[in-house]
Amino acid sequence: MKLHVLGCYGGVTQYHRVTGFLLNEHILLDPGSAAESLPLEAQRRIDAAIISHSHLDHCASLAFLADNIFADAKTPLRIIATSETAAAIQSHLLNGTMWPDFTAIKRTGSSVAVIEHIRPGQPKRVGELVVTPFSVEHSVPTVGFVISEGQNSMLYSADTSDLGPIVQRASETDNLKLVLVEASFPNKLRELARKTGHLVPEQLEALVSLVGVPVRLFHMKPRYVEQIATDAAALGGDVALLEQGEVIEF
Ligand SMILES: [Zn+2]
Ligand SMILES: [Zn+2]
Image (tube, rainbow, N blue to C red; front, side):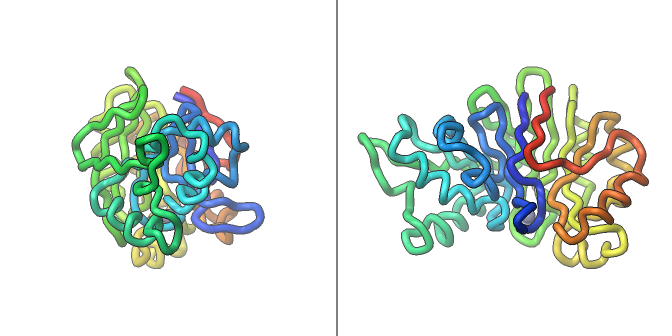
């Protein structure tokens, strides 16, 4: 699997883009960032977007991506999300007011974009990948994912304040190669993190000691990146902050 980090922060500045990952050059995972990070040619290869929850920093760039690719797309863009997240996107983003409803616009007989629902615990094939959602605790309905290609798997936490489901999935997943877990705030802001549905590095200790594979942090709030890096270094193990533009293959 090839993971291209399009954005990995929990906020936007001229140096920081919000969450967005490109898998195997054609599947988006949480396109908070996508269109602003890729040349048009690369955007045209995208045929699916898997979305963990409805917050803008995990889906906003879907709007701009769909607009960029719909004239050339030979197949509909698959928007893959739980029914709650899909309903929020259709009501509040691609609703014909904030942005065109690309699921209602037809080109050569098929819609520009189609919604496909996923449910926690039920694996879904997306191209060469199998994506299995699991529920996590956050301020809106949210799922993390186990994403597998052949025998190799990656675990993605999405936004959450409770590490429990992540540790459980990590312990159940064979051939786990990589864990992406959010760490939005430094340790000293643990209470703020809890109230806003997020994690701090010191909460990741059990996960790091359990998995024995690279653990990469994302969703850092831009103003706290250095403190989060210092806190993460204290965890030991193969732990690092993701970097924008980084490509990881496993
Ligand atoms: Zn969120
Ligand atoms: Zn977020």
